Amino acid sequence: MHVPKNKSDFASLCLESGVSLPYTADTAVLSQKLTVKGLTIPNRIAYQAMEGCDSTFTGSPDELTKRRYHRFAAGGPGVIWYEATAVLPEGRANPRQSYMREDNLGDFKAILEDIKSTCLHENGYEPVVILQLTHSGRYSKPEGTPAPLIAYNDPIFEKDKPIAADRIVTDEYLDRVGEALLDSAALAKKAGFDGVDIKSCHRYLLCELLSAFERPGKYGGSFENRTRLLRETVKNAMALATDNFIISTRVNLYDGFEYPYGFGVKPGCGIEPDWDEAKRLIGELAKAGMPLMDFTMGNPYFNPHVNRPYAMGGYEPPEHPMQGVARMLQGIREVASVVPDVPVICSGLSFLGTESARVAAACINEGWFAMAGYGRATLANPDIAKQILQNGQTDIDKLCMACGKCTEIMRQPGGTPGCAVRDTEVYTPIYKSFFSKK
Image (cartoon, rainbow, N blue to C red; front, side, top):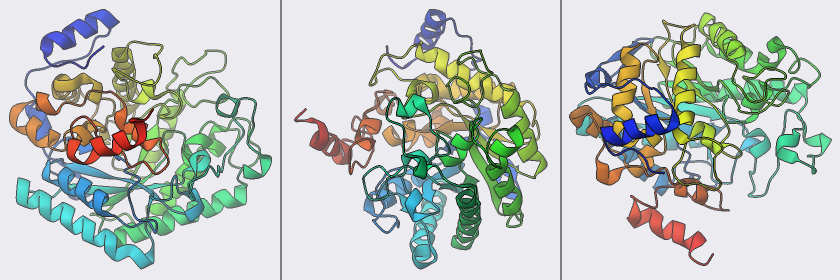
């Protein structure tokens, strides 16, 4: 399997997989501006939150962090979705996860200043920068060893070794998480971010709550309870929303797990997607005033083929990668249809290679979503936005190979992920330090 490198490759993979996706040679729509809450987004390309696990141990941007965002800014996206930043120390996914507090606010102001000034100097405009706020939940590892904080026991993940009951967070603790999210949102505004993302995706704590069908109490069972923390946090955060500050979310529409352990499925229907609850949730967030949304699916730890279809990976996926791309884009279209006035950022484009911009542009033209979101492809090629805006496609010599090496690095203790294939000066040695002896 390989990522498409031309139109012929794309057509062949569509035929091979039985997938049909829109396609256009005219990518001009990606250069169009978008106005959200008084902020001008200069183009329709967003760089998704790409966690580098390379902040200082106190949570401030370190040298690799600064390098990554400087390169992202020079690359010219309209939106930079700044990586997962913990709101509580015990909710950090690793000892070097980003963590903003009053005492290191200056460090975040400095990296924001570099992002804005670099993009302005290189491209003639400033990007909109959204900070992703998170609690890592079952993936918490603040000291480098697993210290999960879970919404409920899940045999899909825990199998025959259930996590101890005292690691199931109480309703009172979840109340504190909501308060911490609000406090961090206020800090983000003070630092100069253009908005925050109340992260509810990829099975981190708020996302896991969406599937807490069997949890008792006010955060489990009914739709109202399972979505309570996200909805109430968003509602309360709207007090911070002004004409230049956005409250958003990157949210899972579908987990890819059977009921009662997965959001976006029906009882007795296996892992077949059902968009009803996602539509209901998105509709309620829009009614609360959310002006921009970012949609995704799946779990990068357990079924990464769902949210990042790959050409090479750690296991043989149960489907053709183009089927995963189609599920992502078509599912986003389906859910986004209930909020036609809210701009939505898509995910899942990287596997499409050089043809990603042409598919994304066609989808935008047809009203599927408003912006093209790129994740791991930005690690391989931080200039992907600039190249697409100028040439209609990414440089083939900097193409993300959808090989998963960035994720392999991330899974190692102390690993600081990046592209070992394209960013050879920095990340090939890092990759070899973990795998050359294996």
